[in-house]
Image (cartoon, rainbow, N blue to C red):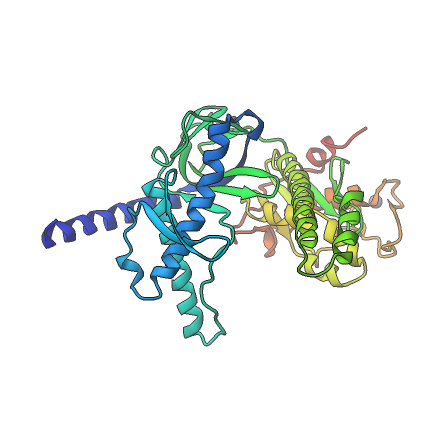
Length: 417
Ligand SMILES: [Zn+2]
């Protein structure tokens, strides 16, 4: 390539990048985590999948060694053999049989960005270490859809370096959506199996979904989330007996012993399972709530709970996850915590000042009576309307999303009888 051609090529890449950036602004980004069905792999596929991560590790470590005497930009990303150390610390040469050139590039690119952030921290006078050799490589970036990976159909995935598609679960949830664009992905090696985390883009508003009527949610500090429709979600995912047993067992093992290492590996797997269960529970709650056109909630200080009153139990709560996921959605409206959602009677409008935290029921002179949490959740919808001249009704993106006019009948319509 001549110098002129190189400049022209770079300009083209830059233009393309700009165009993509503009397009992305009008799109919603979603990441889907799909599990690779290990039980349906044949031996050759299982070996290949395993070797992708092993070879990525070899390559990573080889680049680090290379950097002792050279500039990383001089590393040949088309490398076929790398140098490493065997168990007895003898130098050995290793063939890269499975890792495609795109994957190789992404490993090297990963090191480059680590170096970049290291030097940035250094500039900010933060204490920095240097890159260390890896004993495990657990996440491979798959850059170009269609090259490094491709969905064969709803249940099968083609991966560069692996013969025949592998079986995968959960792709149908986005493959069928209109105008969905599949971008890069990460191939993950986790204690309980292999996963693919796929990034997708879809034009805003292209989802032709019909929403249910607005809903309010009251976030109980102790046990649950209550909706204005009277549904309660449990927010705790408990530790299993096995986890507790493994924790005890690890503590007993001698430090540095291979038994301790083994038990810790089992423990990691158990924690991963717990996390997956939490994630599933959170996803389910969020999915159901977001079926509604608007979700009203009050800003609660979740962080504080960790330290405070409820201590340990909060660690097993999925509330934090639910809140993070909800706040990412533009249809979620956060009301100020100063709005008294518990005191006002939706029926006659009287403010009942004598309602305390201990009261499980809201009762008004006018005869209106309701479970306290349901009452609060329902009031969130009503009060967000009343505050149309105030500053409330701002969603997580700072946009004004106050409803035009919601009558008490609309709110009451969703009430269980
Ligand atoms: Zn009343």
